[in-house]
Image 1 (cartoon, rainbow, N blue to C red):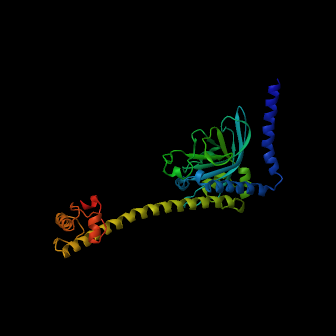
Image 2: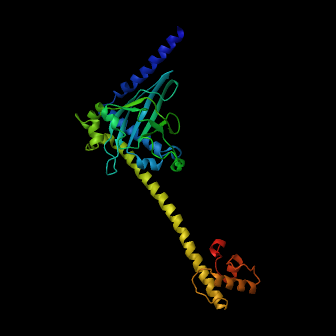
Length: 327
């Protein structure tokens, strides 16, 4: 009997905390409450992207069609888990810019077995254009057909096999310390049109904001949009830098070939001046060049192999050529 009483008391305590969150928010004005939500979401996004070992990979950020952030999700569980949180989501427009974000609610489901109450930040990256479609039908069940896969993290994930974009949603969470990928089950996301009306005006719905893309951003949501734009710009810059480095590394191998041919031509000229070579000065070690090199090696008491090796090249005043290039 005592055990049942303790469990009941604990459950009541959890729901008191749940109700305390919106209660505390009422101390602020209606406008500042939504602005605070967007600002906090921006902070979560910035902190995620500023942590190299656990950030969203550049390729995933580049392919993101929408990003949702739900800061301070209240999780409580006594054998059965539950979640409660309010966040914000923005969709990438056809011109590759981020449109005005809509406010959202997240509830239900579980992050796993636990005992007690904890606060979690959640980030969802949608990889498909129709990823938010469920929101316009009533609700988006994360864990059903729109299953959220644990998102890859850090720079090591850039070359990992997890970046095939075969999941409609990649999710990240942080309760303590670094962000980590997490597979959500049973959570439900819905449009918070009550908050949308307060920020954008009466009659403006999540469908108008996300689907139509005609609603202009307002100052309250600017911090969140700025965080998304920064993340996108940095991801694009990093990918461009990596492409440039790879291209530069590829190009540096080309002068080496040109330099090798120049050295061979110089060797042919020296051998010609010594009367050992009468073939074309073409930078190619053919039979005539190889024969001239052998004659030179015999005259200089070098190893006779017909190759422009280190000793022979040094004597001729040119750079040596590898065995593969000699053939």
